Amino acid sequence: MSARLIDGKAVAKKILGEIRESIFARSQQGLRPPALAVILVGDDPASHIYVRNKRQACEETGIQSIYHPLSQNTTEEELIALIQKLNASPDIDGILLQLPLPAHIDSNKLLELIDPAKDVDGFHPYNLGRLAQRHPLLRPCTPFGVITLLNSIQETYKNRHAVIIGASNIVGRPMLLELLLAGSTVTLCHRFTKDLSQYVSQADIVVSAVGQPGIIKGAWIKPGATVIDVGISRLPDDSIKGDVEFESAFEKAAWITPVPGGVGPMTTAILMKNTLIAASHFSLHYSDDNKTSPY
Image (cartoon, rainbow, N blue to C red; front, side, top):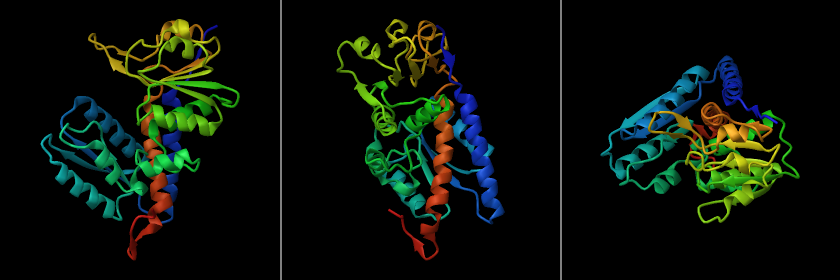
């Protein structure tokens, strides 16, 4: 058996094309393009690459990107003031605060400060709560990107055991909620899990989001499983590797995502989709007579 590749680039391209068409249709109705404010604090090279890719996606779809590059020494108070200004602006539909933030800034505090109606990353407790209660609106980008990839191969979910490796607030925990919503039986593994191989070998769907190259051995993969590799690491030789031993897993799985080119493009595509949703769903709440959050 050899796996079939799940092409994240192709699925993301289709989503971006649909978003571009929707924004053109908005313009025909006299509506302005959705606007995404992007905040980058500091000089982290990886963050600069991620932000560049997101801004390119904005350009491709017709979303207006308003860029706020801030120095490493920006104070928490200055960042709070900027977010409050963007929250109050009727011309801003989405706010992206690129992580990680410098150590002197409390990330959780700042993420909770973002208006849930403009939380296009889907990180705000309100939006996570909506997902937990099975009424999602703005969904965490990477987990919903994974679901979109699984839908593209017509994954059935029900009567399928999904195993997630990694319990971060950004991927692992909301991924659990997404797979529960889809109907899977879900196990979440983390750093305190003993005998990880036992859980992975039982999984019909494997989602690994650890960021440790090769932590998931190909020999552990259940024959016919679907393998989603969210992890991405750059090795000393400058090569890119995922969490999963790709070559050996490829021989056992039915479907598998490559790294790069699998989940990564989907995160950006869903961010654009969330920005369009925010603009379409919430714009009426920011009229001249009512500049308050719909929440």
